[in-house]
Picture 1 (cartoon, rainbow, N blue to C red):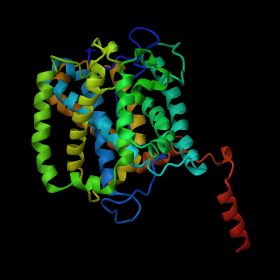
Picture 2 (cartoon, helix red, strand yellow; picture 1 turned 90 degrees about the vertical axis):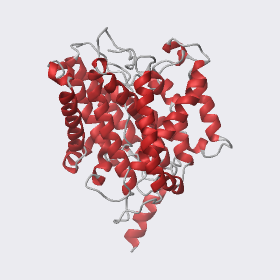
Picture 3 (cartoon, rainbow, N blue to C red; picture 1 turned 90 degrees about the horizontal axis):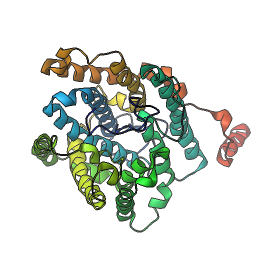
Picture 4 (cartoon, helix red, strand yellow; picture 1 turned 135 degrees about the vertical axis):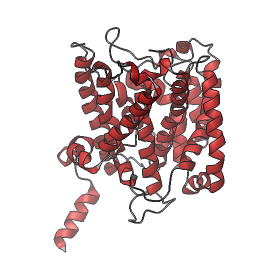
Length: 387
């Protein structure tokens, strides 16, 4: 595994990575469904633009996983991989922050936070641990809810970010404070792995930015001029990444290590935090500029990105155990194209309504039995009885 592959804590050498640099979708159970419309949905319920953005981003997540074993033998694949990881995670977090603006810690939203984030986290943290005991042949790997395994880190991070939403909405300078927190985090290797707090703190500015955005900000990047400008910007980013692949580690874009852990002087951490924040935001804007605002055949799949995200990880982990990358032809141009297409098709299938119906019991459990009814629910029931 190359040095820019995310270093993860394992139970034994060669085991499954405990920490992953994967982007994650907005959990279906934790998203506010009725956001201010920047491109009105004909049905009046969801914004097609954001569903399209989430679907396209989850496709990039799956493709990034598929490219990972191909990077060592291909500088071009390494450059594409670096560019994708520079923006798809920030894009998801910005959108997550945007849809968290109405979080007020009310009983209903706390309930959705638990059922849409905490419950899937526990279930899939356990499931991935049991699965990788087999694929990594590590039968004694423990289930640790404090040390997120593989894809589950984002659920833990979003749980923490969303709980802090009222704070960021009340402080005077939320964006500068969030950036300072992220910069200081890079100075401390002692933060450790518990709930992946290092990554939670370093990605915090993107979430806070999402809280501050309004529909008109998204309209700015969706103008025709922005779409045209995005072409040379992405071309330039690819050229820079192609130059940088043999010269630097892309781990700075993963935001999961301190500067010391990346073998860099301490002052690099704050500087790189600002540099990567600027680069990532430019690429996020370019990505959003290309996202269609109208309803398309894949718009409906944007509501199921949590399913595609969490479920495709089993195939990504199993593909190495099953030896899918061992044939030499897979590492040639035609093989790389086929791997890319296969990853996109797989995650698309996992976002479809039939898959969501099968797994909704664990992704979006109702769990009414676990919660006390609040006063408003009881009042509505009493009024219904009187009527």
